[in-house]
Amino acid sequence: PEHTSVFLSNLYSFSFKKKKKQPTATLTVQLTLACVSAPQLFYSFFKSLVGKDVVVELKNDLSICGTLHSVDQYLNIKLTDISVTDPEKYPHMLSVKNCFIRGSVVRYVQLPADEVDTQLLQDAARKEAMQQKQ
Amino acid sequence: HQQLFEKHLVLLRDGRTLIGYLRSIDQFANLVFHQTVERIHVGKKFGDIPRGIFIVRGENVVLLGEIDMDKPCDTVLQQVSIEEILEEQRLQQQAKQETEKVKMQVLKDRGLSIPKADNLDEY
Image (cartoon, rainbow over all chains, first blue to last red; front, side):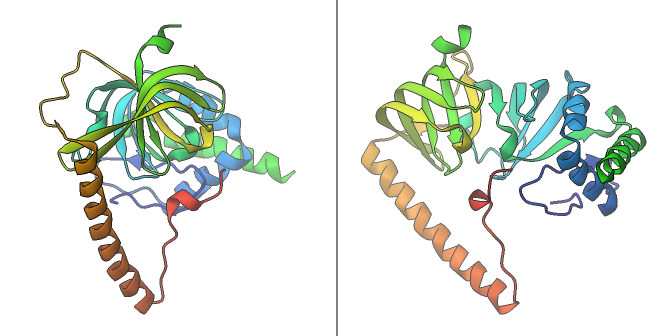
C-alpha cells in the first residue's frame, strides 16, 4: 500500500492521504494508541466528519468509497452511495447503495486532508495520553 | 422498519456472501436472515445455493448492505448452475493455494512470516 503505516493488526489505524506526502510513522502510532486509551475521542472525531466522502479499507482488503452517514460507539460505520474503489474484483457489491460496516473489520479510514486538522487531532490525542498516564 | 423488507447482502469474515431478507439485527450485528442464498463468485460467473434461515453471530460480519433493486447488476455477471460454480471455486482455491505455498516458501527462506488477518482476536 502507498501509505506509510505501522501495522498494528487489531487496532484501528488512520492514514491521511495528503496528495503525495506520507504521514509520519509517529503520528500514525500516536493516533492508534489514542484509539485504545481514548475511545470517545475518535467517536467524536468521526461524528464531526458525517457527510464527508471517505474511503474505508477493510481487513479483507476490500476498499469502499462512500459518504459517511453515521458512526457509533464501536466505530461501526454506515456509508451511503458506495462504490468499490479498487478494480471491481468484488462484483457482489454492484447493486448495493448503502452499507453498514462493523468497526472491528476496518483497517483504514482514508479522509480528505483538508477536512482534518491534523495538529488539533494530534494535540487532543497527546492530551488523552497524558491523562491516561495519571 | 423499512430495513426489514429489503433484500440484504452480508459479507462474512470467512469470505462468504449471503443474500436474503434481514429479519433482525442487534447492537452486536447478530443477524437473522430469511430465504438465505449463498452466492459464490468466480470471475464473472456466480451461483446461488439456497440455505433457508440463517443466524449470523455479529463477530463474523464484515459488511452488511441493502440491495437496491433499481441498480442494474446482470450486465456483467453470468449466473451458472450450482455444480458449475462449485467446480470453478474448487479450481480457484487450488490455484490460490499453489501461489500461497510458493509465497510462504519464499518468505520462510528469508526468515519472515505474515499472520493471516482473519485469525486475529477481536479488539
